[in-house]
Image (cartoon, rainbow, N blue to C red; front, side):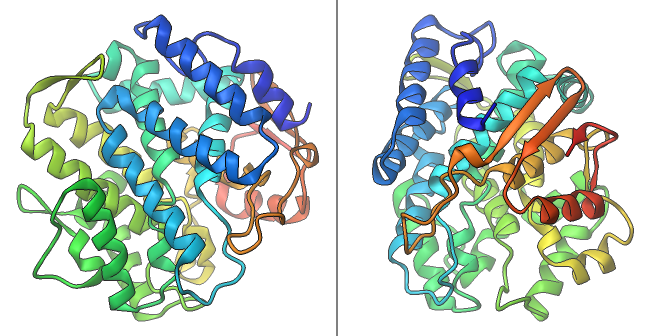
Length: 373
């Protein structure tokens, strides 16, 4: 079954997007607008619907207005920013399709879902929305829908003026002030409670790899990339939400029909781990740095790091309707990607440039027999 048919079929499950604690109206509304998105045959209309859906999906955690705005800035700079990389592709629709694909895999592949639920159980005693699925949905909404928000910065090499402009727009839409005494990406590094964002990510990975990776790429850029977009996306997300949690510390607020808790446990466990998945999702793009810092480790491990694995495999498979930023007619059709999902396998039956995907899987993934290609 091609990927679009699979998604159209499965979104009819009433709890595809939610757990049992959700409201009937929210479930119905999201199914309706996502169906419109999946049936849309116009690239610009898809982008408009994607922005609306991302905002609505993030609402239950009171981050709709704030985090969704980050994607708007990304979209603007990809379409109109003055950068040299003509092969850049648009990421707004891509982030939403990555999110949908992850929900599809979680629903249909029992083995993967069990690994993810076990990770939720082992990494917090304070479930969002009251159960393991609710906790997964909290983390997955953030990491899937925000994993490329730093791509605009990576396009500008080490141009401090352009990077400052990008961060200025992020601050403008979120009504925040970030690192006024700093320049460029360094505006994003300082968190409240005297914490450094890279160090926070290092703690999740149980080493100093993010700090080392950040410094290595900055000192020895790869293909004119000084700042990896995954790491920058994680830093942006941490910076924004850290300030939200500081302002509303330990409060529970009522926001557009949702009771939202700003207990720091949610940030320190759920959000930081979502940011970690974002931070490492693109490190295989730098094979020499990867080999030096991570040695022979396969970062994308379905049992050891299932959320990281889910984001990476969905990001790798999400090729349909991923148009070039400067040519919205140049994209892969959904019919070129066919999956077969069962309780213990992700079967990849049809995929463009399948050999490249196989090489990536062999070198960077440890899927424990979960993927059949």
